[in-house]
Image (cartoon, rainbow, N blue to C red):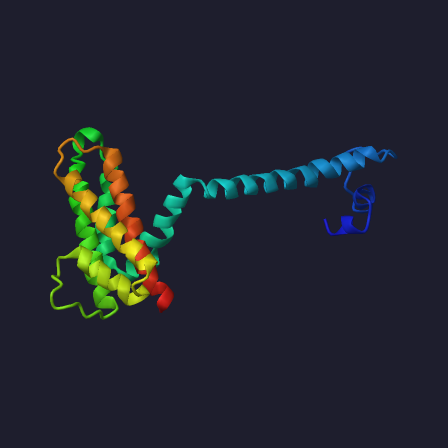
Length: 206
């Protein structure tokens, strides 16, 4: 490729012995050989890389990468081992067949994961909770964590509301015997993503 900056492609092939398996004085067979051995495979590789790059930004891949690299990655596991264990156990539930699963239990498990995360995160950053904040009050603890990392601006308020909504969504899911796999999966994804948002606030600050 570098040589083609200064020479015709035909000369590059001729001078480097790139050619057909037979002797000929015609130039085209040498050009064809160079194209088939180097140019076409290279373009196919580039095409594949571009296609993969595009696929990486499809919604399923974004969610998968978020969990693999952040929520269920080695860094998160080291910082929040108890939360990691809870999320991993929930993920394993989705390997069950519908007939063997009680999807409403995922709601309660997600709530427990959020509680464990709030406690782990508060301990890690040595957050002194307000006297009136109960140790099991996820909404209150999350609010204090967010404000400790990000103040009380619009972003902080929006994130507090998001976490509170996810927490509230888990309640009816837990108490409905006909909860579905898709509902449970959304609950799991929302829980993990909300947890990672708070965790990253402290990553950025440190």
